Image 1 (tube, rainbow, N blue to C red):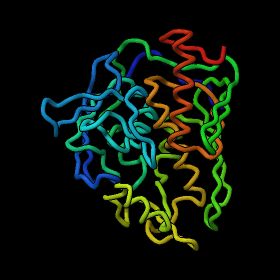
Image 2 (cartoon, rainbow, N blue to C red):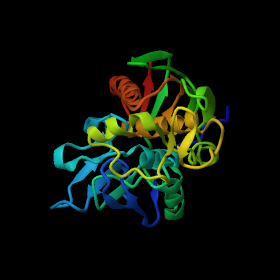
Image 3 (cartoon, rainbow, N blue to C red):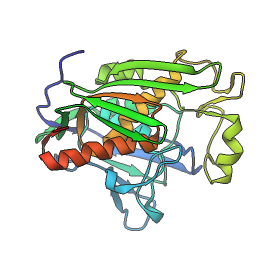
Image 4 (cartoon, rainbow, N blue to C red):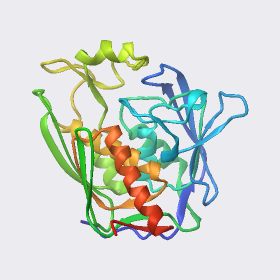
Length: 294
């Protein structure tokens, strides 16, 4: 595993950058714009479409829903499907950022993190001073939430070992290990797209979800193969996307995570349970550098 990056300063961006498109679950057409923020501001969403432009911090206290996406905020302020955008933020090691939205959900785009990662690269990540909050692990611990389970162990930087399993000929059992740096995330995880199954479509629509789904916004599978989405970008694109989702959900700690996370059948509900376990332990041992597992 590579040596950890030295966390010398908090990071934001030099200039604004935007992406626009349709939200996967709400179907709302929205523009997401990244703005520079001062050191210590954290990552904050601003709803420009609502009166007073209310702000919602990207923190675990704001988690509202976890079915097939991670949503933060409450009631009218809810922002759906933040995990792809936040994965890009975390992968760039950006600590302070204002994300302005013109609707209730960042666009799904091609179903991957890559468009957000590239937009942030154009915005120019830059040091802004102050000390980053870093979560470290002093001893191993486990988290289980439904079918999802996690083992967390000490490591000098964020490493993910992820295993998924579906009874489908293109998925089966897939596993991968990824050392998460800006460079490796861009190469190994950012292009991996979200996926779903035709057998789930009617049920999800009945629950008010996937209103904005299109043939180009996800890999869609029937019982035999791919129905929409074209050729796979890797044979194991599915597990890579699940790894990217973990990066995005862990960003809700508001910290840079330095640990080896071994995840089996991860889900948004499980990822957030993991993030909450990290945060609870961190609050006991203090900040900005927080040792976990003592």
